[in-house]
Image 1: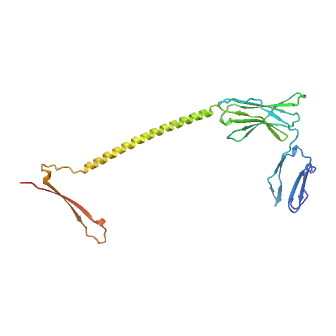
Image 2: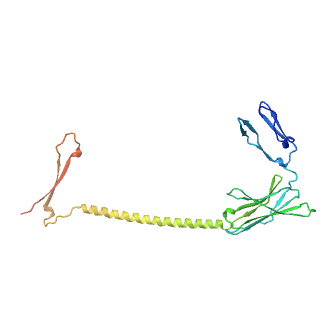
Image 3: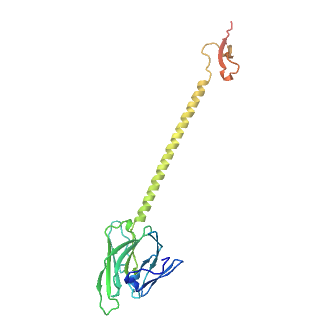
Length: 276
């Protein structure tokens, strides 16, 4: 209603709903008179341009009533820690006024590491004596056949009426022995890992020691092989004169060749003299 001040509404809304628009600046206001519980809703403001409607974020209107004095009480005492596979039975008793209107019952589960989960339930309601201030009592039940780690958490009984939700005290479901089992398994795993590490370390030390010993023996064998052995004949060692001569032969080639092309030949001669 940016360029006009008149609004179009259905007949059922014209008496209580009124749109106040200012031409020029595009400001619109929605006024609701004689508000009631049915007016609880989210209201959006939209703009129509080129046959397309663009809506804003919206405003949620929550209408409360003075008659929403609902009291939810969880009578079941705190449960003892359960074992995996056991069954759990939760109960909740809700006391409300007779004129509380339409009611909806729920079970909410809230876990430490899991988001809240809602389980709608139908309550078994009975009327109480009219002389009592509380005239309506509803019982709710929730059962889990086989409890496991995914079922742990706090379960709240809740009743919704006249736009309000009232929660009970909550009942916590625990599984006994989980932490002990996990800790024992962790200890066993770490112990086995440490034992395997020690065994592998000792095997590696033994292998390195054997390799080092073999390498030393090979080195000693090569050195002993290079030592000169005495002469095999009967002539004394002092009478033998051994001469070593190194001859260098150069091939005829171009003068610009490097020394890598030089061929070296070692000639060994032995001169033996005998006394007459």
